[in-house]
Image 1 (cartoon, rainbow, N blue to C red):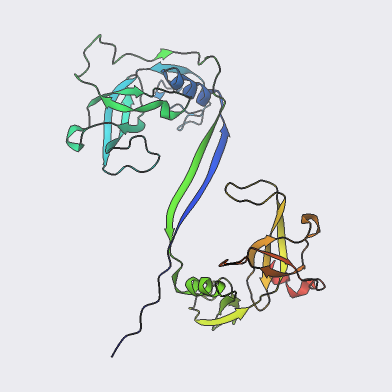
Image 2: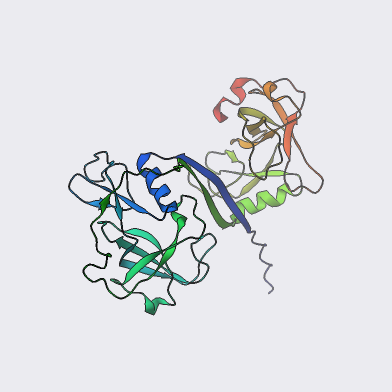
Length: 325
């Protein structure tokens, strides 16, 4: 007896990324500007503790903190973990240790990378110092990493000094930062969505019907989100549908060659009990409306509709789609 071949398991690498922009208050501004000037600043709390990195409010009392102090660029490793395979964007491109370092004069630890030849060269309690980046811009990456710093400190050698008051004033202070947030992952759609994707390549839209409530879900998830039972009955829906709600997009997305403004809408395909989202074109953006009847537009070789356009039919009555808004 010969078993049937297993269906192809679909997988796709996906990247979600966006620039996160934020302004800086006086404490964070002084800290990052100080790094640019090879100066490490902390902030002193009301009970005399020195926090590095500095924060704007005491994590214990919630008191506002503004008393800046300078600490040393040397310190002690309090704990560590070896990173045998660095990833994109990490401080070093060779294996290194993630370390928590309590800088001399500080009462809290700073997380950063330690450049070491191997895990046998790292230990809790070892002395380290900052290795400054050659090009500094006012970011935590101005500390390129930490490096071993032996021998152990001796009295009067300057490594165990008390934090010194600092006014936090620098020329051309850093007032804002842009952090690139990025998530790389591999997506596998599973049985139900694999069938949905394969049907789209044939210019069909297929959902699955719940055996209990009889609703048809598009895209299918393999189970009814209301009843919690498995769905296996496939139902072709559309291709036409109704705009249930929409938004006008005025910010151009990276790597998306669409001129703004444009409209992104929820569309209830005929025969479906769940609205999917897609772009609306073929009509001025300010003429898109709830109830607009639309149909898919496919590009040559496309595996999914490029956009939806008006069909020219009269608008759908609100009562026919109000449950899908």
